[in-house]
Image (spheres, rainbow, N blue to C red):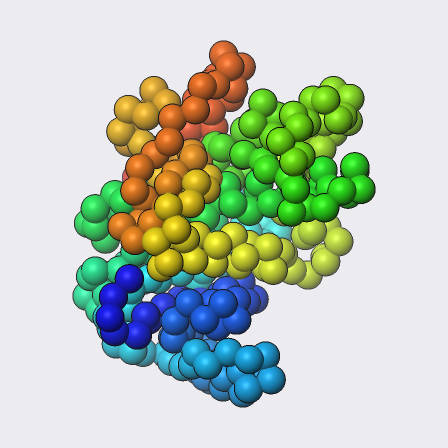
Length: 315
């Protein structure tokens, strides 16, 4: 993107943030600053990742810090910091706690990295992306949410497992919010260009769509004491790669809509062309009436979360 060395800030050194940092290093997208409030955690993980470089063959460096001043001048920021929803915690509880965390982080980004592009991963993702956009005051093309990349990847994986074909041959597109109301699009799902409807019965396809919607929940139930992090981190870094390398790649991302798909003033997953300016443009797709209705329902759920933030006084 620029003549100087690319600087990437990963805020949150938990499983998702640290894995995202590792993927960025492996791809040599730039030098990484891993930031977290827990003393010693980002420093230890960053040192470990740097020491892996000579073995894994990358030359990018990772620095750990508890000081937001160290993200100064970052070209791109990936935000994973936040709390998972715990037993007994209401949806409003999660909104309030993560809303306050994201608000504080955005103040630091605005001060230290005012020219950065920001990718939000913290849940509830679409609502947190909308909050970040409000707090940062950045142009809408430089604030994105990671969801569609992850959900589309999950759907691709399930199709590959079902058909016993290479995941590399599968293209999927999942729109909407990151949750139960996400909108997988079978009409835009292919295997080496062959429509998925030619390769799978409607009932099996519907079963895989249902599994995609429950993709995160399935992993939580299996792990029992944690949640997914390899694939969520990979989704965020795929977006980062497209931006930092100016790929002009079409990827589903949570973006601010201002009339696109008949929706306004809401972040929701839609197909975006990603390049050096962040979201270069939102790509229109022709949706069926049922798909449009589902996307509107998904956006309505995000709006409920936004109203929840307002009721809590987080805005």
